[in-house]
Image 1: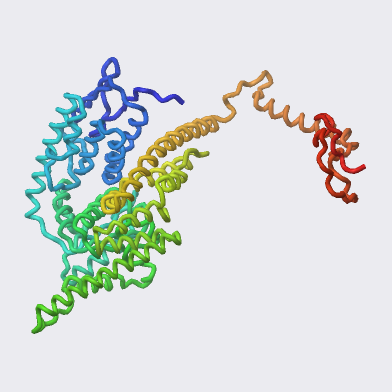
Image 2: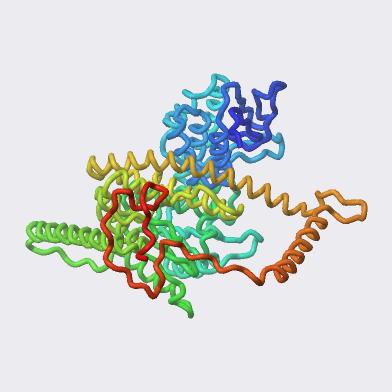
Amino acid sequence: MKQSKNFCPTFCSTCGGTLTYSADGLEATCPYCGNKYNFRGGKSEALMLALSRANAMRASCDFDEAMREYSLITERNPEDGEAWWGLTLSKYGIEYIADERTGMRVPTCHRTVEGSILEDECYKNALKYSSPEQAESYRRKAEQIERLQAAIKARLAEEESFDVFLCFRSADKNGAPTRERIVARRIYDELSRRGIRTFFSEVTLKNRLGEDFEPIIYKALNTCKFFILIACSEENVNAPWVKNEWSRFRDRVYEERLSAACCAVFENITLAQLPSFLRGQGVDLAKYPAGGYEIEIADNLQLRFSGGASGAPSANGAGMAGMAAGISGMAAAADINGELERGRRELAEGDFVSAAASFSRAIDKDGDCGEAWLGAFMAEIEVRQIKTQRKFSQEVCNRLWASGTTVQECDRRLASNEHITYAFASPYYKNAVKYSTPAMARILAGAKAEVMDMADKCNASLRLCRDDCLERQRAAAEGYGQYDTGEDGRSSAADAAAAIAGGAIAGGIMGLIFGGARRRPREPRFFSPPHFRPGPPRPPRPGGHFGGRFGGRGWRGRR
């Protein structure tokens, strides 16, 4: 399949509306948001497909995955303004929704960012690498988003703070209540009974409109003292709204270096299916068949928020305080070394889930520990050791898939390849490069370039295989109706099948008649009979050793 040089999209990359093209097909305008596109320079099909995939993630409000995809695109195509603009929209959680009165698509904000979008580097790059008309369109949209962000920030002071944030999926695709909703309700009732302020969407957002959700969600995520994810299936964990909440709290954990500030309440899933920052501690509902988990959670949180028992200060205050600080520092160092040693052992054994949990606990204790970040990255990508750049990149590249036999298999292998590429864009990789030694940072950077290049080639090959599988499926669905029929009403396919069957029967009869007197194949001349014991080997002759044809008498055994 040839790769076309110009590949023009059908939908607007900003709002998702259908584009209107010019007569020559090289310029387009979005009638819903006003975006203007110029395709005279042309973009490769691979780039347009990557942009379409990232735009689809953002349109479904999966902003975290969209940011990863856009980041990969900007690394390989740093002068693509559309990718920088998509990264900006994902960073601010912008979704375009149709206005019922005007029919135009207007932005709604699902994330609140401290800084101004007009000063954002991604936004500046979008203006820098776009055409003048497109840059002007981006500038108008950015000003609209800035006003929306300012309105949200102005209302933050009016919103209340929370102690606990409950993150869960409330309803399934059919609108029925999920198991997570029932579990979250029991936890909320117990915490509320004890006076712990808890964000529970079913109650907290009950009398608010959709556009009023973001201020209170942002305030709750940034003021809560503890975060609880309720997860009973991997699909519900990765639901767009759920992922939008736990990914934002994950960023807060990394930025503020929070320690033991979250946990997962899970059922019917493994630790590997949970977000990596929640694998360190959790509550397995399988251990509470009769309930009671909400009481244990409330007891622990109540003790945590009350600060525990506080004793009176000692008369020897300064000396005791210094000694206590020294002892606590030594204990903290011992704890970090213990977690690192445990993580190394689990990596060597191939227990990557436990290793990720051990290194995550080490990161909680020391956010500047390069070995902890490196170990967490290795556990994420499932690598036991890193010796050289060549061996490391080769081991990772060997896991990339380049072909498949069915559409489903191609999709699974594409997802597996994308998991590897996403690992190289994760905070684990970035902090491993930041806090590791210069030599290790060079190894990681060099391996990333090789893996990304190989991943592009493998993904392109997989997509070709997927297209071929789709063609075969369509051909199989059409069946034999595509063959012409003969005068007797039978199809040529039926005639061919009958001919093959008749030939097989005839061949079998002829074999029974003439196949009984087969001659036994003659043994090779250079093998000795089984009853003959050969003597010592003869010395080589001047005429040669391989037979008379090559100038010698040849060796046929002793006669």
